[in-house]
Amino acid sequence: MMNGGKHMAALYVVLAVGMLSTIDTVAQAKQEASPIVETTEGEARGVSNEGYQAFLGIPYAAPPTGPLRWKSPERPAEYDGIYDATHFRSICPQRSIAGVIGSEDCLYLNIYTPAPSGNPVKKAPVIVWLHGGGYSTGTGNVFDLSSLATSQGVVAVTINYRLGALGYLAHPALSAEESPRRSGNYGIQDMQAALRWVRKNIMRFGGDHKNVTIVGESAGGNAVYMLLASLGSEDLFDKAVAQSGAYLRNQPSLQAAEAAGAAIATTRYNCPQESGEAATAACLRSLTLATVLTASVTQPIVDGKVLVETTPSAFASGRFNRVPVMAGSTHNEGTFFTSLLPGPMTSENYTSFGTLNMPAAEVAARYPASAYPTPEQALAEAVGDYHMFCGAMQDVDDISDHTPDTFFYDWDDPNPASPAAFAPGYPGTHPRIDMLAFHAGDVAYWFGLILPADRTPARAALSAAMMSYLGNFARTGQPGSAGSVTWQRYNRNTRSVMYLGYPLNPTYNAFQAHQCELWYSAPPSQSLF
Image 1 (cartoon, rainbow, N blue to C red):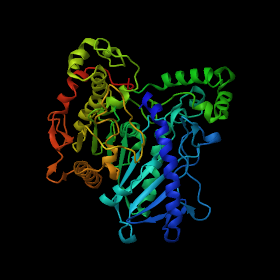
Image 2: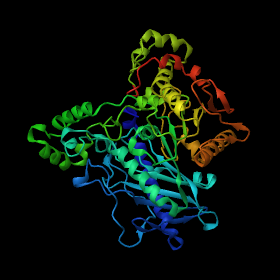
Image 3: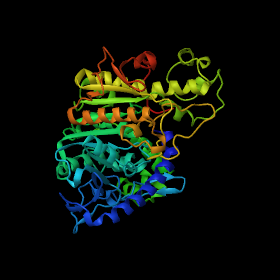
């Protein structure tokens, strides 16, 4: 999310604080039976629970503080004694309604491993979760993946990565420190460092280091596309799942990002270039967190190292990491984001809100206000179809040309369970927009995080099917069957999409339902509005 990420920051923060105290209490109660695992940095003590073990707050890189701010991640230090992995560590710095929270010492991961009868499952498939939040908010700490681990027999990993300007600022003074010249994309490099740590260590936690699946939603899903296209990600993962992430498809160049960064440094940070590159870099590293995060910098770039071309270009040419891919979106991606736009909207002016890169008359003809309860609802459908759904389908068209094991979904629960287990209060309400199958509403279903008060037989069955598909994909590279419904491969000729709704439908015509014939002719999305 771009602008939407700012509005969600407080939701992630509240949950992160609440889960921290809860896990700490559980960890203290279980200390006597805590398992100890040897890692490349030394021994780590975790937590034993009913059916699973958890190892929390494990460092996968050195703290990116002081001279390491705006540097590629470096290896973590060896432990002094047995490392205490019974509680979460800090979230990465981000803005909230309470101000700036988190610490730059935040590059940690959490591991959930199935342990029936206290014995960890050996050589289990590994799932690494990349949280969302618009590259500006969020944390892996708020996602308890123990249900996924125990139900699917997988080792599940969540990570933190650098956010906002700390994760994505490019500047000529920072680029001058690197050879070849480059800056930015530090958050994506953090993900790569976490994946390298997983490759080296996960077998000690019962995971199969040769069977690692990355899964991400929103910004995390966008990062999955970046990692697929990044030459630096080769051999770091074996399968990829991109959920609701196709909204930043036309990444800017290093030159453009450096110019934007230089303007921020001069006007907002008071670190002008005229003082010289070394002095400017020192000035940037002396800034307080509060000052750094006054700038909104939340986009990966074509920096020549992490990305050498835009993701659509890489997918069309076949220059990407060719692994099995599962991708998709929620049915009503645009409802939450459109709810953030100012009004008033009328039947005459609703198409002028947002950035759709399409003549207003064309949008109005395809999404006539008369066909929806309100003009806002009509615009929400157009926003979601352009900025999320059809962009994902267009990229997967190209990916499937080079990777036969490609799969696509459309998640559609029009009255979904609350995501309160990890985002209390989201997505909120709007007087003229029904949120329906909103952005990120599917996450609770994929991970078994539907709260007891929200569990109905239909929701429970849909969640069970989705978890089964995800578990199968992590094991074999194919989602296979859930009950009697087999998920078919996707290609640009058949475009067989799995409708994850009521009922499951493996041949759903999502291309038509989301007006993709129209949106394929628009330029690749650069934002959400």
